Amino acid sequence: MITKLQIIKRYVRSIFDLKSSQEDEVETYNEVQEGIYFKGKNLWLLAIAIIISCIGLNINSKTAVIGAMIISPLMGPVFGVGFALAISDTELLKLSFKNISIIVIISLFFSTLYYLINPYSIATDELLSFSKPTIFDVLLAFVGGIAGFIAISRHNGTQVLIGVAVATSCIPPLCTAGFGIATLQWQYLVGGLYTYIINALFICIGAYLVTKYLKFTPKSNTKVKNVNNWFGILVFITIIPAVYLAYDLATKNLYNNKAQHFISEVIQKKYHVVHHKIDVDNREITLDLLVEKYNAKINDSLKKQLLKYNLKNTKLKIFQTVEAGKGNKKEFDLLKTEIDLLKNEINVLKEANTRK
Image (cartoon, rainbow, N blue to C red; front, top):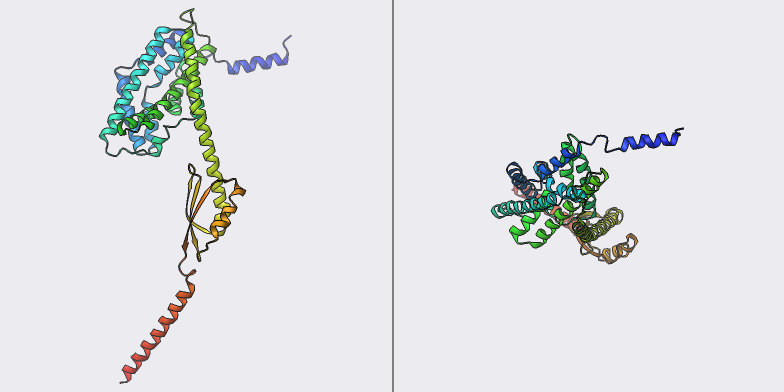
């Protein structure tokens, strides 16, 4: 007799079953293989996407960068690596790595060329954002890889792949690396390439796990053991800097929030803040205050309250701007009195001249 629990289990399995809507394995294999090749149309689309992305990074335009990621056919060889490892297809794996190398070379060439020709080549905020990946970028790439390969294994999964291309951001980091070459700023070259490797690597892992879960038929009974081992080592090596950068980012954000809270709760309730700047790297808060008169004790009184907001070892720089008409009220009143006296004397002289 079928119990209610068994019915519930079957129902849950039917909801989460990925195999029911899966296309034929041969179709998926052909689709992956077709997406790997980079020549003709795909090569031109990649070059155009790189230029659009460079322009977007150059002018801080998120829409242009997103448009470039949608246009770019960059994901094919990356999915190919994960798929080939899962089904032990060495030929497909070699082909995927070969075309990934072509992608990187073409991307670096066109992005470097753009930044060499363009006189307005500066490190914008949008460009800098793709030079320091964190563990969150790793998670995005991993989940994106899972979603992307699920879409590949279905009919009409194009829309999902577009979303994955935007979320995982493989194009902009290569543009950042090209900027580093063009301007000889090697931190951008290393940061851009590292970001690309992180994204590509964890997209591969997502694709690998989905392929294994769907139980695709292996092309060879011999597993690609050496490659799998090196793949695992590479994952471990690349994830360490991302974890550190995520910790560093979290620490800086936490400090910035504390500093903002200190300014709003302590400073702004007592003084008019004209301008403030928080230097997270050097643990320094700079304030420009508008005061009625200069007060030499402001610095000391505010520094004592830094500890209450967990802002230990924070340097506090305070500039005081005396508000006209308040700090110098006595001087202004004296000048006004003198002006009134002079007006009266002028009026007396005018009357005397009139009588004559």
